[in-house]
Image (cartoon, rainbow, N blue to C red; front, side, top):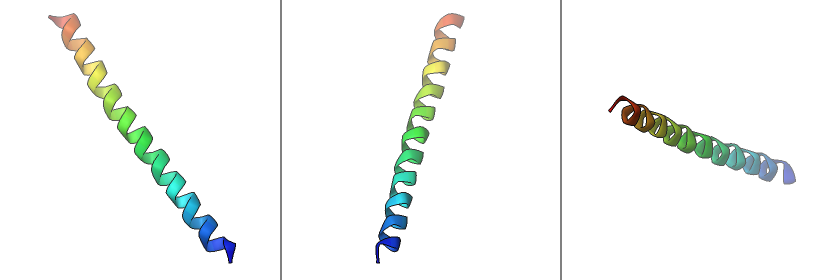
Length: 41
């Protein structure tokens, strides 16, 4: 009976991790673009 719950929990953890990396990668791209614009100015 625990198997479906474990699978759901793993899926939730994977999704949370994906969202975390997606958020920080976007933040990193914005930060890099911002720094490049400052250096060019």
